[in-house]
Image (cartoon, rainbow, N blue to C red; front, side):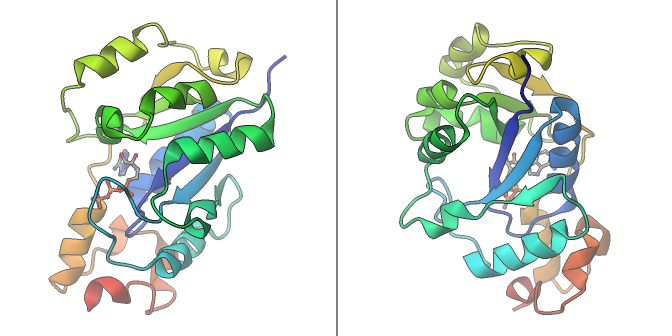
Length: 212
Ligand code: ATP
């Protein structure tokens, strides 16, 4: 019996941009999954975001308005300390029973997976869906290639049949957009209007953290 998977797309979303939205939307279609965007509180691997947690949530809400395929899940912001994905997936597994879970990662984030806390355990809780990302053609470490070799599947149907443990590469529309570039443009007084979801321009307060 096939069950509609629950996919998790984590990130800093500082700010959310059309790259995030496009790949999350396409992953929802390709996997026939519910997709939750999950902003991270204190990212263990990087410098703190420019916008506060509340500001990033406000931007996500504005960006996601008017559709129901992509939803916000702010649970990691309610937790103290670093948000470890493995803990979040553990919690979701307890809530969702045997429903397939899919952790969505851009190709750049996937290449860095071996630096994550208890990274091999991620596959005990979820499948992994790797989203193609232009400009992220970085070499994958050997330990990662070894770990995923036997997990790789070509057909997304395999992700519906099991709760966790597989890896699929999802060929999504390549968009070379990054939050770093958008922050740079806004800081320089530019107006990257069409790299951002329209909802972010509804309230001038939303992009203020980057224009300061
Ligand atoms: P920054 O430039 O601040 O590092 P970012 O644009 O990479 O930000 P994040 O919030 O760090 O955005 O990314 C969250 C997730 O979205 C990661 O898995 C990342 O690989 C993925 N992602 C972001 N932008 C794209 C894109 N244009 N195409 C595919 N995946 C993307």
